[in-house]
Length: 213
Image (cartoon, rainbow, N blue to C red; front, side, top):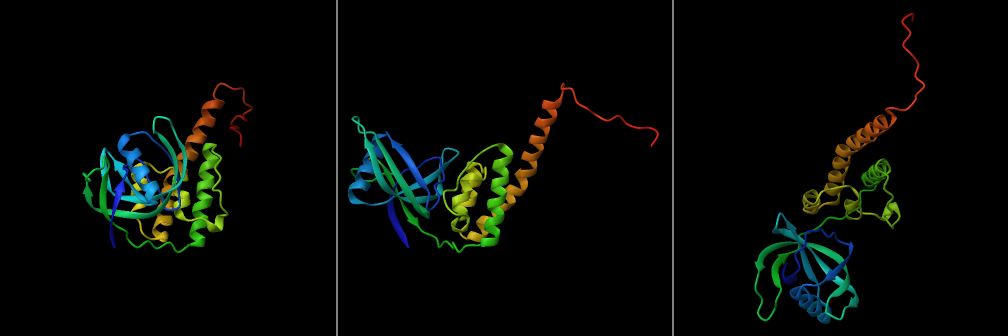
């Protein structure tokens, strides 16, 4: 199925189910938000990578118009709904300042993978502990999906976009597991290095080598 949607390209990846707060200040996007809010329609956030609008993005709905400032700027809450693939960019829309796109919504297999899910959750918690970060997933473990975890795994924007293109929950969890498998030893090594550096210059009780043994 294809559809035409207004678009708001941003240098972020918005995952399905994710809640994102936005401050709207550009005239074209103030118009877009006003139009979508009045008509209760969704808009798309395609990902901007290396100053280029990428093919994939997320359809989002406005869940709350938090504040409209005197100068017309807006603070809004949105929620990601589903991933789209852009078939054609429509840079100019009659009587509109913003652009649009003709998009396709690929099938997305979100069947849970409980065993693998828990392995990834444990890996992320291990990572957070190693770097001294405290994060709450805000849901019980068994209700989480890969999309709930991706922003917590230390992925770069390019890696998040690569992850974003996987249309099966099993593939997404495997991606996160491999990523954690690569960075956890590095992080652990850095922590060990920090400890060695901090010990340097301190008085330490060390046992000398015994040549008679």
